[in-house]
Length: 116
Image (cartoon, rainbow, N blue to C red; front, side, top):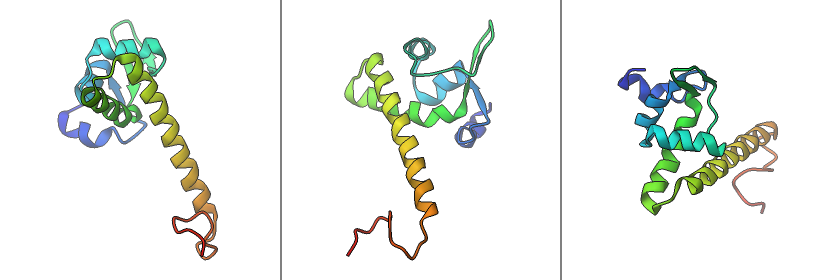
C-alpha cells in the first residue's frame, strides 16, 4: 500500500495490510504486533509463511492504543486490554447508532437531549 493511500484506505475494512505496513501506520514494531497476536488482541486474516495479513479496520484502534502506550508508558499486555475495550466501545457505539436510526426523529427517544 502506498503512503498516500494509507491515510484513507485503512478506513475500508475490505483493505488488508501486512505486518510491516501496520507497524508503520500504528507506530508499533513488528515484534510488538506479533506479541499482540499472541495475546489474542490482534487477529490476522491470513498468515502465509512469509507474512501475516490484517484487516485495515484495526488501524484506528491500534493507532489509539499505540498513542496511549507512549503517553502512559503502558506495557504490551495492558495495550492488549486497551484494544479489547476500544473494540467493545466501537461495537456499543455502532449498536447505539443502529438503535437511534430505528427511532422516529419526532419521538425524541434515545436522542442526545434529556427528556423535558
